[in-house]
Image 1 (cartoon, rainbow, N blue to C red):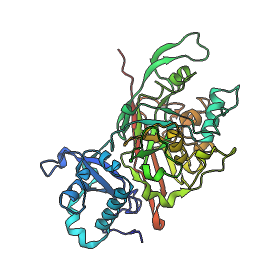
Image 2: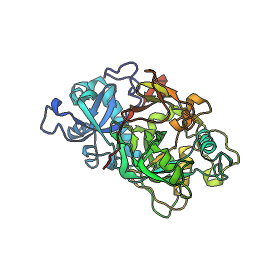
Image 3: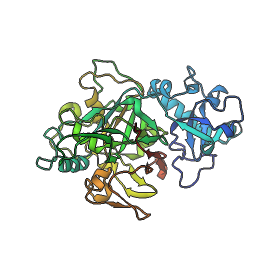
Image 4: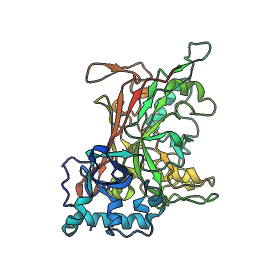
Length: 416
């Protein structure tokens, strides 16, 4: 039976009960160092409001490791080790944190989260962003193409996506500089250059690839759990005015490549077993390589917060295209997976106005301002605004697991 109790004190509302155990990269803050390598990056696992230092655990022989993958400064080597190693290490960590006989040895290897700085948890190899919410796609189609059908003809036949910029994926807490570029409002005769006036967010869920694949082969619809290690929250920042001018005919480019924020903790797929649900019915039936073999919808409740005000609660369970279908489509042409690949769901939106995952939809392209708790209003983001995504999901034995915060603050554009 899975263990659901721990000797570690876990606050009642914590994102990180023992049924979660997400992985991240941390270093001890300068003022809190007590050893010679306090500032070195190390792999940690969140439990309650603390972090288990896996580097220390492995160095003391409490976890067997075929190499020093748990003493590395990123998760990539561990991600590449594959499903059997992921499961073995998770089982051992659960034992160390649940059996009182280990408490004396392990307790001294816990770091308070308040004493740690969290870093990008893995080296991002490639980044792909999908467009998997039928509600979001319908809303955007109505706004951007009011004289055409909201959904393009191919949308119900395949998961539409684009390749993003892996080098601008940043960890939660990183500042986001307002991008500059070409903008052309519909009423203008020619484009102008300057800072984006319609800076937006996209509340998404991302999947982190561990086990790579061979170029020229396909990853089957039933093989997602052999390749995907875990899940993060994603904010795909978007400059809607730059995007609207550039995206015909090739799609998103500079309007989305300046920053993508991810949460610092990677929640293993193993922690999300109780959250798995069937995806929505699909009509027409997809081609055989996209027909679901298992339930890979996830029952995640997301919150979007702007300057302390919750402005939206998008439901991830309603996503039309699920992660297994996205991965199968991503590789059907023989494109290879690499350890550290990140593929994101696209904006998560539900059918109700309060479930929209972008300001473009929430304000209906600026027509309907959003009122924050301080009385100010927003259509798009202003300099100094802080956006935070949070999410939770059902865990084993009635527990609730979370992902930590995915936060970014907008800073003014760099000007000459």
